[in-house]
Amino acid sequence: MNWIRHCLTALCVLVFGERAEPILHRIQEDRTRVISPSFDNIKFDTFEVEEYPLSAQGFDWELWCRYLNPPKSWWTQKNHTAPIRSPSLIGCFVVDREYFEEIGLLDEGMEVYGGENVELGIRREENIKLYSCFRVESIHRSCKYLGVHLNNKLDWTDNTPALYKKGQSRLHLLRRLRSFGVQGALLRTFYDVVLASAIFYGVVCWSSSISNADRKRLNRIIKKSSSVLGCHLDPVEVVGDERMRTKFKHVLKNLSHPMYHSLEALGSSFSARLLHPRCVKERYCRSFLPAVRLWFRFVLGSGLPKLFILLILFAMVCTEMMEQVWLCGGSVEVLPCSRTAHIERAHKPYTQDLPTHVRRNALRVAEVWMDEYKDHVYMAWNIPLQDSGIDIGDIRERKLLRQRLRCKPFRWFLHNIYSEMRTYGDTIAYGTLKNSLRPDLCVDQGPDSDNIPILYLCHGMTPQNVYYTSSLQLRVGVLSPTIDDDDNKCLVDVNGRPRLLECSYAGNKHMKLTWTFTQGGSIKNRDSKRCLELVQKSDTEVGYQLALQKCTDQKWTISNILAANVLRS
Image (cartoon, rainbow, N blue to C red; front, top):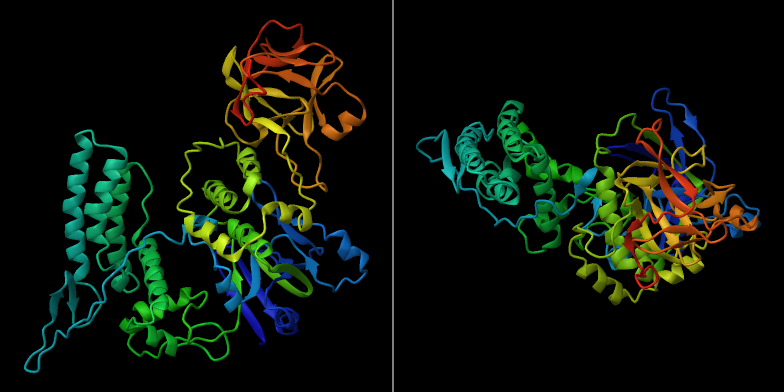
């Protein structure tokens, strides 16, 4: 193997010559190992290589991937070429294909970086035999078969006008429905069932082959529909790509499918990839089989090569997959001897709604794998544990997979693999903290450098996360992920003023950091007997500021309660 290269949306990864052998050797010794090379950076503007320090890879309680210091056990070996045990992996890993299948592959219910949902557009299509449009005595320029318009050039120029005409008439109906006051889910259902079903009919056959002019023509209907619905709709190329992938996966899983043996014949003898089929005509080169092979990631058929696979994965896939490996009998390593340099793009087009997708993925991972610690994920994202309003999809198959593999509990993972991770089992309430005097304002950590809590218009993001504990501490801001990170910040009475100081520091100095609080009641410091209250301040942005003073019966509420009996008034 001279080199392996995968280029995806955000980065380009190169593994050269002798850099690959250490990984393959480790997997040959133990097929249950999942291995990542060590990462370096290539600056996108100068192509200068920037060497990163050796690190393990983990995640925080929002389940964002992050770099970690190697564990103490690795440092004591005094061997900088030794494998680094890693709780998780970021971006790239190598795994034995058969072992990967045994532990359940990837969770197809996950949404990966960029909001790409691997299960979008699932649609079973009957196998269609295309009958010839030609007769011996004459040639028909075009014909219609099963609703698809074909011509003797197979360039789809006859099909697109027919689709466009259907789309226009259905767009008119969509607008009429909106004029009658139909909105929301019902209007979207009409689009999916009536309009989209017409313009995307047979899209697997023609999406990779139509001209740019025809594609723009169909996308104009989609854009106008999007304006009517008031939401984003996927263009033709996205829908086509998704449905081609779905069809491709279906063929690989079905040994009796007529196209399965065509795919099997394209399997490379040297790597886990598909070769480009031999084709001369441009119309065939852009058809389903040559186009879909570009998305080939891993093989499900038994007849294709059983080699190692280099995968580029993103976002929550890294956390879910690696927890699955550790809990179900495998191991995860970073190899210092195998280094990977990546070019990170200056602009990533998938980041606009990234937190929404990562949050959904995080809750899905928590519900399947994290047992009694799943509430930590809900707390970190400031989401109610019950009735979150977020659809994480059907997780029954993943739970059955965990039972079938007899995986260990998540507590074992925290104690034995990721012992650096902080846990927050003492939390009894969390969320945004509001005063009845101005319920539109929330307690906010304010600028990091000031250590002064402020009041700010409620937005529910991390700076406004508040955690009340059984030790009567009020923590404000992000949950500290590991013991190597800065400690959480606690609300402290410092000479009659509210301040935010590291909880461990304030505790060691015997400062005033304990508070009595009941839902709908006051927040009173146990030592100073002062209450946290709102006072008017004209020169502040919101007209109020936080103060510690003699209690005047101001009432506070926190949005989510884990132990209701503790906060009962």
